[in-house]
Length: 322
Ligand code: FDA
Image (cartoon, rainbow, N blue to C red; front, top):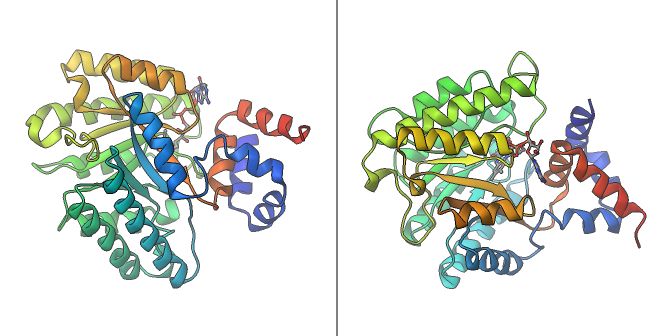
């Protein structure tokens, strides 16, 4: 119930306007956000790189309601791709289609993402499309499929909490040019007719889908399934979780299938389980951290609170600090 309430708040304009007025809220959110400027994010990525960890850069923002804002978001990402190239770090970008105008028109959004894919192509980079709530799922798949006709360097996220994801995953990875997918549990408020309501079922599906992704990765020649040398294009599957049981299941599955450690990657969020990130990297697993930056931190931050009550207590305890 607490999770549903927080997910509702993450999307509520009145709650955003109220909570973002308090300096302690911003201060607490900065535990999960690298800063407000792209330079802050690049510095955080440099520090991760020094520890053998790659990154994916997220310029925070979603659900934009006017074209100028969506175009500005696309320009900011082009600028970020230039910054990544100039600094030489092993980072790609993660984008949300509602930040790039999906609610304003599919073709308009596709045009914006196309610009990013082109820029990424030129700079040896990769664009990951995050998956948002189910009202955007079909349109996200349509935009992704359209892009994939022209670009190899785009990937998508799939969510283990949805009943339909197994079928989507199989369709997206069929053939000789399977999509590079990030598997996560799913972070939005979904109805029980679309998503497993029980965590145990989500977890079981996550383990099953991890194995399917690994089987697909193993069937491909390394040149096609592996990461690029500059650390920007990820290997075919990415397993995004902080859950020790999911990590252990992925490790066991890869070992059983004989899938080498550099043919998939673990992904975690900035500021969460830092020691575990380092430990996996030290064990020669590929690790990538999702590094968000920007001023639009409210919905991202509240979704993090919904995921883990301990994060909520951290937030509440900050209330009483100066
Ligand atoms: P979950 O929240 O189920 O927690 C399980 C266990 O993990 C906990 O009981 C605890 O043991 C451990 N754990 C979790 N947080 C911890 C912490 N801070 N410290 C210690 N232990 C902790 N979602 C989405 O819908 N679309 C998307 O595009 C993305 N993209 C994305 C990218 C990346 C890189 C990540 C890591 C996640 C996403 N997500 C996402 C979010 C995802 O769907 C999910 O909501 C969160 O990752 C939380 O689920 P977990 O699998 O981490 O474990």
